[in-house]
Figure (cartoon, one colour):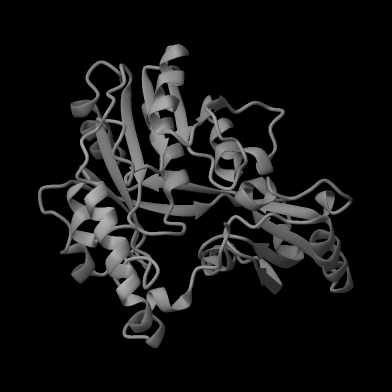
Length: 328
């Protein structure tokens, strides 16, 4: 279910954290135990898993897209569980699918390479094999022990990192930090990270530094002359607002919804009317746009894509080549 990321996850010693800590211990215990299971299936295809250790957006999908573009292999497919969608069995994303069926991330991935949705990752890998995929890039799945991964890449959002370092529901961690760190072969660090946090990472694991930047060339030529009402339903709305500030967009009002929010006709009509009163256009993210229902507001919305770039692409490629012999 879509939710708004609790602010106390990113503060220390809050009363909410203290109250929820017993539940976090239980969650962490079972999460740690689950990760002790051996993989039950090794695909014929090479598998790259791109995940994170926290709930909420850290940049997994932009990272998966950047890795796919870097490898540039026509036999690559994406594998995702289709979070927020209704598909329960392995299925290939098509042009006819809507976000309410597939979730938003699957639609974005399918613009880059064939994309499979499978809540059961093993069944998804088997479907990929049937379609002669040589490389499977998993968007999320570090916490799924069933499918063997040739490479496990852990994405870390530098500024938010691991929050208060508590497990769900007291904090954002999807498993105890020590458990999560040892199940990663390398780390993708997006943005600036506190050196004390970075020092927690295993010394032997490579670190690839990256940045997520706006692609304003997709916007109207004179977008900076417009006034905007910015809205989004992502885990960390401030990231979107900060990105708009970086490209000098004139944002007069903002509206934040829960992560993966499914917009209704009523909500979009209200947002459109509100923007008109301010003589402004609407602006949102790519992930949000695919969740917006059809209506007269569509032509009044500008979409700001973002792209992930690595500081040293050669370093990343050298690492991938060592693990994916013959597939690059």
